[in-house]
Length: 202
Image 1 (tube, rainbow, N blue to C red):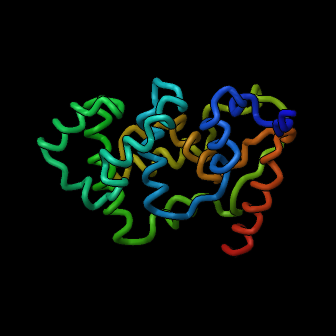
Image 2: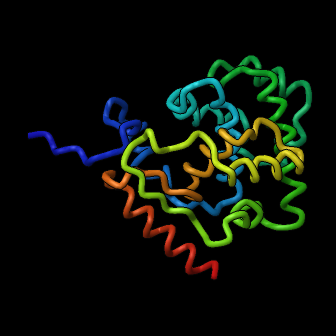
């Protein structure tokens, strides 16, 4: 007898096992690791105009192609690296996004000279992670005033492909906001992790 599936957000259904795993194990979990935050921000930028599942299925290829998102190494990429990436069928071959990733690595390094990137990005949440109690995907906005503010700040630091919609998706995936629906089996666990993080930051 098949094991009953847990209740998930509509987008995180069981049609694709990797998507379900991402929903259950990553999306909405507070993330503080600088390299992984940089990775998520870059991949959200690559997702623009595409489905997240497309990016997710190529994530291992992206990690290989971009040296596991080592910002210091990416910042030194030259024309040979751009040509290598444009010839790599395992990733999204978009020259503007590839060049933006190099610029973003430089911006990331500039920020981290002053403070950890996690401190910079999470510093926009004065009261800690935001836990929503939404009951329908119709209630989830594509962007918020806060994502607009963070987008503006990132652009001021030299980041590209970080519009407010991209930033809000980044905030959701990295646990800055909890947009799991209240009926989803991950809403409460993620809320608990967010509560612990908020307590540590006080």
